[in-house]
Length: 172
Image (tube, rainbow, N blue to C red; front, side, top):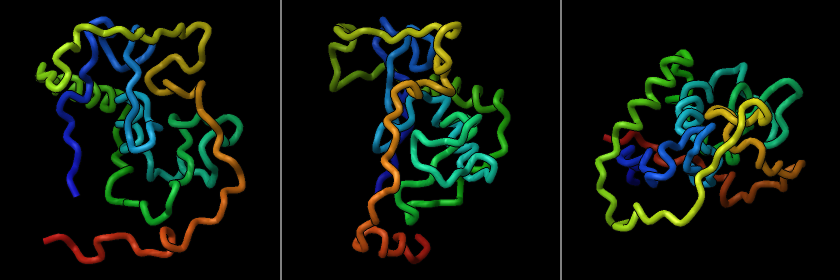
């Protein structure tokens, strides 16, 4: 298995100078399903995912009243065998999270191939107004478009959930 690098993680068209709200920003999506919408959410996830106060036995879109998904509520994992408790409780402050985001934004080297026409952006930058939109922040970015997961979830196929996580042996 190959791990993705953080190189060019903040690469955006020049018309949209950042990936973070309020903007104008270029909406990116992270993880296999696009659940994470900003670098701030990505760093916050790895900082707080395994903190007991942030874990809830709910699916996406169903955080308890008074809790905000991706801020102080992480829904349960899609597949329990995907759980990895080696990172996810870093104890970073909000300032330290922001410093990591700022560092990640420096990892763009300007190499745009296979996108030689990156300056010819024909889309639109996203903007929002924090005064009128409660989701207009890097922490809540995209929450206005959450599609609640159906409850109850259908049973997990034994071919997926009945299999132990791999690798079972430590990697030398």
